[in-house]
Image (cartoon, rainbow, N blue to C red):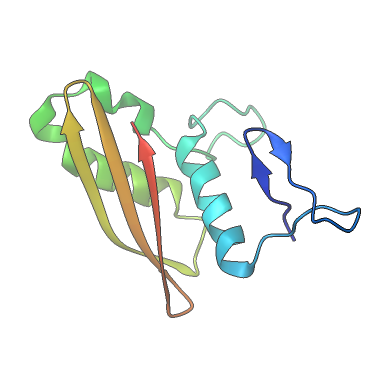
Amino acid sequence: MERKLVDGEYIPDGTGGLTVLSEGEEVLARVLFRLTARRGMLPFLPQLGSRLYQLSRERPSARQALAVQYVAEALREEPELKVEAVELEQTGELGRLTVRLEWQGEQLAVQLTV
């Protein structure tokens, strides 16, 4: 059971506790963490995270294929998730990455800037 975080702060539930994420929201929070954490930065969990931060170093023509590879690599330890699509919209050096997922028959999506 994970708590809802917004801008680094836990959100109160109005009854003296903290807001708890629903099952789908909890999965999305884990996905977002795995995709935004830099792979290899946690010494005791070297396989956690992604290499998406490296996309800007690559040729623009290679970025889409690498984004698919890096997303699959980062989410490999989430066996209940199926990556349906990885879409990279490039705007100069930055890009918007949309990852569409299926989890227990539910369609989920997450967007981030890479």
